[in-house]
Image 1 (spheres, one colour):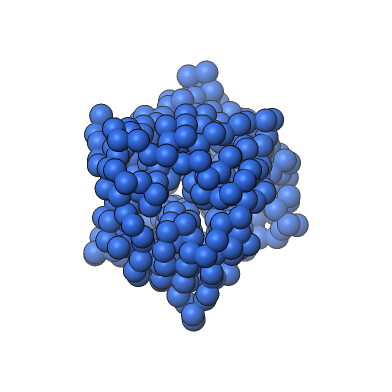
Image 2: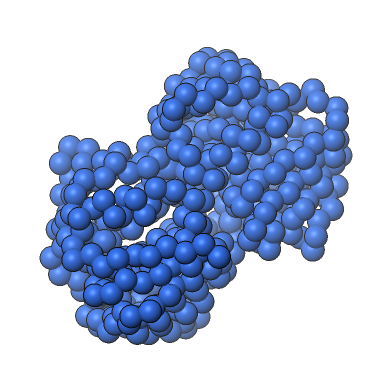
Amino acid sequence: MDKIQIDPKNSIRGHLFVPPSKSYAQRAIALAGLAQNNITIQRVGNNDDVLAAQRIVQSLGAEIIVEGDTVIVFREIDKTNKEDIQIDCGESGLSTRLFSAYSLLFEQNFKIIGTGSIQQRTMKMVIDGLRQFGKTISSNQEKLPLTISGKTKPIKLEIDGSVSSQFLTGILIVAPFLPFDTEIEIKNLKSKPYVHMTVDLLRRFGLEFKQNGVEYFYIYGNQEIYKPVEYSVEGDWSAASFFVVAAAIGGKVQLSGLKKYSKQGDKEIVGLVEKVGAKVVWDKEELIVEKNKILAFEFDATECPDLFPPLVVLASFATGKSVIKGVSRLIHKESNRALALQKECAKVNVKIEIENDNMIVYGNTIKVEDGTVFNAHNDHRIAMAMSLYALISDVPFVIEGASSVNKSYPGFYTDFRALN
């Protein structure tokens, strides 16, 4: 298992250009693969999930030119392909569920495979949804691999969004290119900000639909993206959240590349650190976060579960007991994040209790012992979160499974070390 040593940091200071949002980038690539004209996507990023999305559309016949951090898609996927299809989604949950909706464009066998933890994550919402369209699906007990076949028929689709919104995103992206209109009714939707992101991109790419909040969509079929599109991916608030918390507990950081009024749910981290006592200033398009004090807090992370790891670290530095709601959203991630956080934080004397849907973190007890070894649990966000304990440690510590950050942020350790 790969390891990295994290050295103590007395403080964290400096300027960082936040990497592009992998969620927006994957959506943009999926739409570009269905476009009838050239699509230029700037600031794409080079994390594993985004590279998986690029490989998928290429394997389906799209032609791509990569020029530095820009991707140009100048030929759409080949929807006339009559041969059986297989796509490899790597370990990307979004790509697996999003690109499963691409199967609606084909009648032949459409097989979806993946690697690592994605093979253990449920695809029930995908299977239930595609079957409504008349598809036949075989699976490994509702997990990968999936083989999808059969003719796609028009329906009024009903989706349960209680586990994930990722399949809904896939349907919203593919439905405009089906030969009929699609009506979608969503129940128990979680992660609403991710649906807002998808809708944002549909509009940017000129696609037409009607909606009633995020509970109902009517997507017009037989559409085309017939005009060239240039799109620049905004900064990733999920990645930024670790540096927002790092600044709040240990210094002052200036972050560039973020949108203040982004659709990304993880931007809520800014309001929280300000509420608990950090100094927060927006200077034009620059976010500046500075340490002041850290109060215990209560926060509902149901709509932004990726914030749990940095929030737990923030809570562990606060004086008193903090409560974070939304534990049920952590089961179907790269790891069971609730149990992973509980286990790893215990290594530095941070007590975490889980009561129903709440995580209770007892703060201001941190002690990093010589020889501490964290396990990332093959989860990029656990690895990044544990790194932040360098800001209180007097001794180096080790993170096993350190390369898991490649999933979303390959340059994380370099950026973290550079902020002194």
